Amino acid sequence: MPKNSKMLSAEIIKNFQNKIYCYYKQNKRDFPWRKSISPYRVLVSEIMLQQTQVSRVAEKFVEFIKAFPNFKSLSKAPLKEVLRVWQGMGYNRRALYLKRIAEIIVNDYKEKLPVQPELLEQLPGIGPNTAASICAYAYNAPTIFIETNIRTIFIHEFFHHKKIVSDKDVLPLVGQTLDAKKPREWFNALMDYGTMLKAEHPNPNRKSKHYIKQSTFKGSEREIRGKIIKLLTQCKHAEIRQIAKHTDQKSETLYKILNFLVEEKLIQRRDNVFFI
Image (cartoon, rainbow, N blue to C red; front, side, top):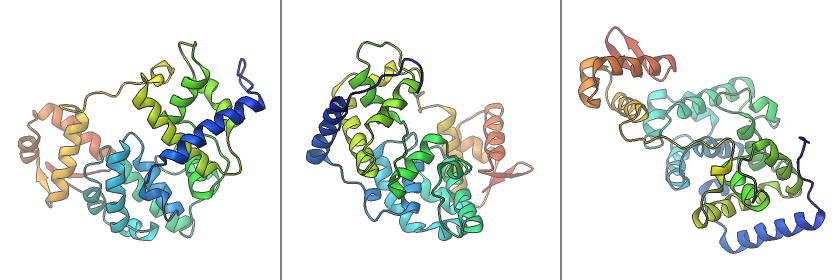
């Protein structure tokens, strides 16, 4: 345990768990990924929920699962089709990660997602927190992790007077308060309680050492990348002048963005023609 970490008494832990579960019992949210739970569905939802509003994910998740119901169907799907279905989610590299993960799971793991977090971390787009969350939700494993809602709760409840809070301070408390018998339900409860806190209180996450305010989407390179991907999912290919007209961008900026997309292997290039 890191130096200066708090040790919570059994009474504090019990009261904290009761508070979270009491709220959850009365206000449990209904999401499609909380039904018919499978490792595949959990993986898709966890990747989708990275940097995206829950309401948008709730709608797109159903469409994505209908189009690609399992690892095998996703692994065999053309990237262009995967990106087309992904439209509206943003951060298109996540769709590429999901397809690559599906290919690895089919080819190397006989279509079974690993149970071990350390193996999950070796997959594209999966870091320690995402790996742990997948294990908790897919396999009901007593792993611990931090994301924005969890961070919000623990800063609000246990760090009232501290101006800057590191995840190193928070993580031990997440471990101490974990309901190891029902980790999946416990983390669902934390997610719902954290959402309520962020709506009713000034965002406690601003006190986090790791807080980063998301940049404006309108006019950003993220928006331009999204426009390019959308265009190329709708046509066989496009020349640079067509893309420039579609995105209303000058060639210097556009080449930079296109080269970035090529490097990420989201699109391909042949001379001045681009395609997926």
